[in-house]
View 1 (cartoon, rainbow, N blue to C red):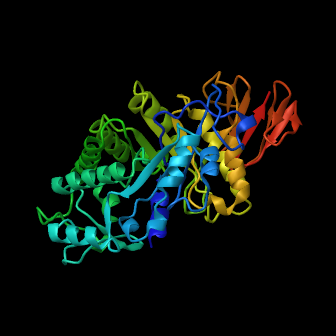
View 2 (cartoon, helix red, strand yellow):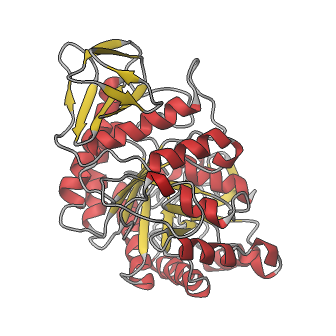
View 3 (cartoon, rainbow, N blue to C red):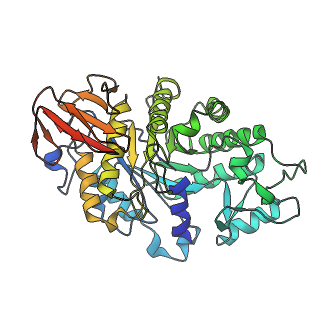
Length: 437
């Protein structure tokens, strides 16, 4: 159940995201080597992943494949010392001092299998009930009991709990606070006949109560762990949701109340995660515009803040004819179109990537990609639905539609797979293309 809950985090956190001091990227020549990571100074998007306890990787692989991660701190470690991966993550930090390890915490729920926490929440009256007095669970996850995020006592407790984990296991550089950004009461509780009531009012939660509850939880965690630790707030699903006038306004309200927030995650930014569907071109473009807004407003002037987009390629049902490699490159190229601040943003590929050695190798290659620095903002090529961005060492194209288009090239380039192309290039639907000079 613990592993399943972590997958829930990935399915609710695009995005998944952020690196306080990612550092310059590693040189392609040393990308797959073991030992100290060597860096150069080119524009970079980091790679983010999730794991239960990193039992699927050795330290060198983690240090060479990823820049940032979320993983668990279990209350049961005292009974299961083999679950404690402190030694491995200390090795990761020694190999890659810029690596950022985040501890995962779902701030919206208390799990019934962590009995000490559950019993305490029960005794405090934090577990929420519906109008008939029945406890309310997260949709599809009956072991996850919704907790009253609007309760100041709970907010202070969750901040103290996260701090205690980070203090006890200092290899954690911060926390991924899952389910900490909600835009309405219905998004919090799922609606329907099992909606929880506010135990202090006896009525359903209002949108304003949930928005203030999200801000209260985040501020309590930030105050507890201190400014030297990253706090990644996960919950903005996509630009499609963010573009809604009410949802977007409510998201921006919460963000305005947490000015010290370090990071934001989005789990459905470039792909309709966990539903085997692509976003339409218009919906995909809304995610690009959301990332622009976040960088120009929330992230602007705050170099410690980061964004993580999440494109799940592990264990998911894909649209017919789509490969995981295609989806991974599509998400990476979509990020490349839009990122303004080098070394501040990551693209997440999910738990279980180790089950696909080709994906792990691809993540390593993307992480070491040297495109130089961007020489333009993204633009749309006339008479097509192809979006492009120029870099000092190449170009990136993205086709977010079902159709194929041909584009004229201004020079000869080498593709990511090593083929030379010139004159024109056909770009198939839902495909990202990387061209090197």
